[in-house]
Image (cartoon, rainbow, N blue to C red; front, side, top):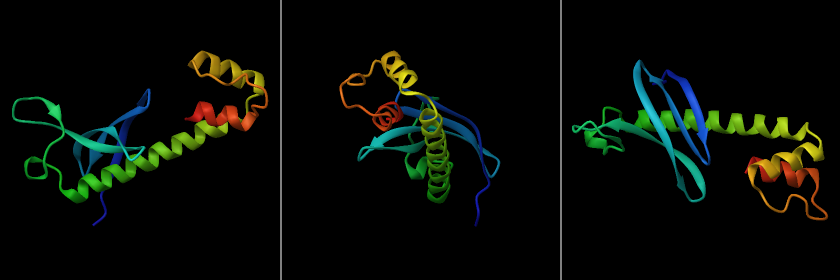
Length: 125
C-alpha cells in the first residue's frame, strides 16, 4: 500500500538534518544519525514521560513500513537538495568559492593545484 508522505519542513544544522511532516495524516518528526558514514533518518516520538526520542517498535505509533517510507522520502529530499546545492556552487567563480571556503573555516582551499571541482567538493561535504 502506498504511503502519502508530505514533508512540511526540512532543515540542515551542521552535518545533521531534521524534518517534520505527515504520513497518511499522522504527524512525524525525524532527525539523522550517522550510520556507516552516511546520515540516515530516524523517526522521533514522544514517550510516556513526555520526552522526545527514539521508540522501540512495540511502543511506536508507526509501523516498520511507515518508518521505512519516511526514511526513504527524507533521503530522497536530502539528496535532491544536495545535488541542487552542488549545481549552484559549480556556477560560481573560483574566487567566490575560495571566499566561501574561508567563511566556512575550511583549510586547503588556497593550496597550489586546487581546482574548481575540488573547491565545490570541499563545500558540498
